[in-house]
Length: 259
Image (tube, rainbow, N blue to C red):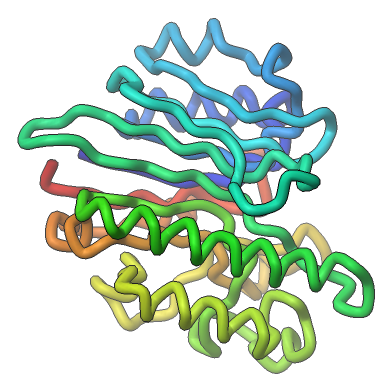
C-alpha cells in the first residue's frame, strides 16, 4: 500500500496538477493540505472518476485538509481536540480496513507560526502540544497509525540546504524542535529518516529562485506508530513535480507499506 502527503497550495489552482499526478502515480491514499476551499467547493467528480473516495475538512480561502482513498472510509474524524475556540481546519483522520486489521491515517496542516513575535507562534506551540496529546491517545490503541502532512517543522540542519538562513524562524526555533522531539519520544518514527540519512527537501519557496538553486527544506513528514513503522518498505519524495507547470511550492512524499 502506498500512502502520500502533499500540500497542494490551493486545490482550484492545482486541480490539473493533482489529476495528472494521481493518474501517473495512483497511490492508494493521498492526504492533501491547504486545499483552501469549503467542502462544497472541492472538485469531487474528477477525482472520484479515478477511483478515489473523498473526505474533506475545508475552510474558505485558507487552510483545509482532505483525504483521497481507494479504500472506503470506516471512520472519519475532523479537527484537533483540546480547544473549542479553534476554528481552523487543520486535521482530518480516516480509518480503513486492510488485510489483517485496520490502519489509521491522520492528515495535518500544522501552523506555520510566523512572525514569532505575534500570536501566531504561541498558537503553533499550543497546537503542537495538543497534537502530541492526541497522538499519545492514538498510540494506546496499538494499531498502525500514520500521521502525515505539512508539519512546518525543519527537524535538523540536514533538512535545510542553508540552515543558517532559518535560525529564528518558527519552523526552526528551539521551542518547535522540542515539541518535535516529544512527538518522536512518544514512539513515533520519522519515515524518511528510517530509510535514508541523505538530505531530501520537500519545499522550495517561490521567491529568490529557491527551486533553481535547490535551496529547499524538508517540512512534509510521515510519522509512524511502531505498528506502522514495522510495515514500512520505502519513502519516495516526488521532487520532479516541483518542476511541473504552475506547481505547488511543496512536492508529494509517499510511503510504501506492507499492508
